[in-house]
Image 1 (cartoon, rainbow, N blue to C red):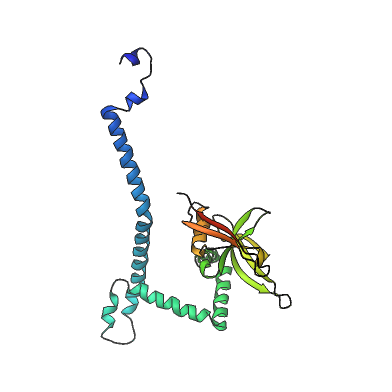
Image 2: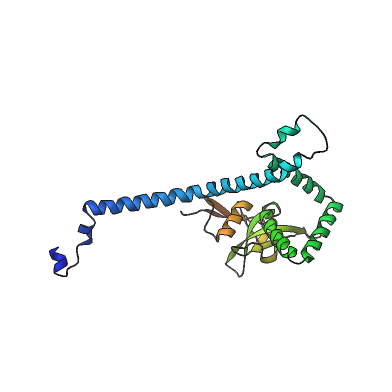
Length: 245
């Protein structure tokens, strides 16, 4: 009290000691651990919540339809269990995938999409959902992850191989690389690169998409780069890199 009365600030080392210092350390400890636990459980809680909503909506859509089945069967009454809607929708999605894999089915869905896109209000909603679906299904359309020198020499950018072409006369191969923008991978740039000039990596498409969506915040535990020219025969392993927490 004498130090405060004389205008001299108390020693911070002394202020941190004693009962009040212990309480503050305990508060910081509880706060850090609570936030850490929340961040660890947050993805799991969101996943459970989203799955519960999806299952609930699917069941509420399918259960009324089961009552109007055109045939009588002993098992019909047992089709109202929780989750049956999700199972039936999964079967519907599979059959739709089979339909669009043939030319006639693909043309039918493309025609339906063009009509919906030209419809006022509906077109905006349909176009937005098309974009979201394209992002979600992108990992099934990209063949592999590579790095190319972009947008200038000595600077490399992550890209996804979307196509490949080979010269029948020289055997030289080109790859079409899609370089996404961060954090919205639905827009980006396209580059056609000699396949010998790309940097190969062991990154999976899923890990690469996480990097793009997070702006590089979410990194895999480790990944490697290598130059693997197919014609020159001078392979160069650039090394494996571990992400820092």
